[in-house]
Length: 124
Image 1 (cartoon, rainbow, N blue to C red):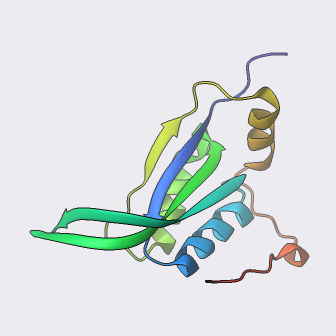
Image 2 (cartoon, one colour):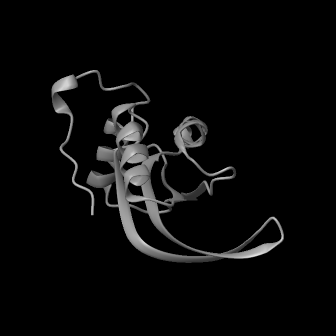
């Protein structure tokens, strides 16, 4: 088998579970991500506009093809409520080949137009 296309994990954080689900669903439905893990209960301490801030956040781990980073970044900025969202790409140096192929095959950059596949979502 030949070399597989590179994949990555893109990280962003959001302030609410609802926004975490909204961004995650949009990225998957738009074909920009194969999977998004939502990690709750982050504690963030940061400096913003001259003040030290303390917030609870949710971390999103977006699995996608490296070539889709610009489109994923644009989509996150379009939906995100933060003035300056964190959007970081972490290239995957090694992955289990079957998983890497799954990410490549599902993150096509083409929207999923199957309206019957809408997931049910429950919020905390």
